[in-house]
Figure 1: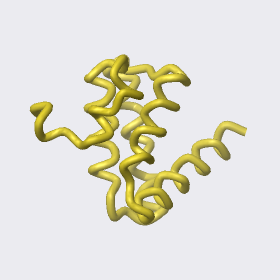
Figure 2 (figure 1 turned 180 degrees about the vertical axis):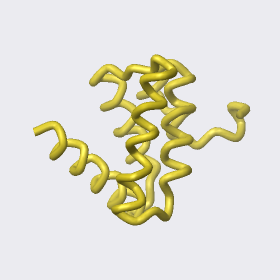
Figure 3 (figure 1 turned 90 degrees about the vertical axis):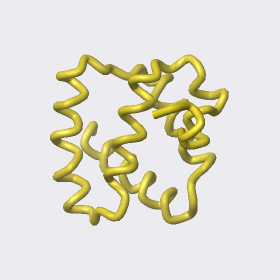
Figure 4 (figure 1 turned 180 degrees about the horizontal axis):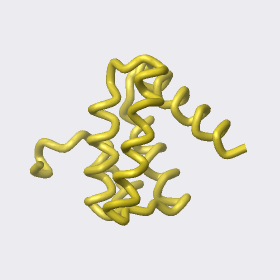
Length: 95
């Protein structure tokens, strides 16, 4: 994908130092998760997490925080709700 066609969040100053492969992965994740219900989304997350490991794409906490902040900055209310839902499920799984 050319820089011209990238979502605005991928060009944000917050993610300028994040590996472009990681940004591409996140973009694909958010594009493919659009419109999925909670159960579909959770079923989708498991293979995506395996793919991250297979491709050796590890995110530091700083990279994830920067990416999530940049994504939220350019998101609609509906998208923000979905992001917050994903993050809440993720945090609950870590406890």
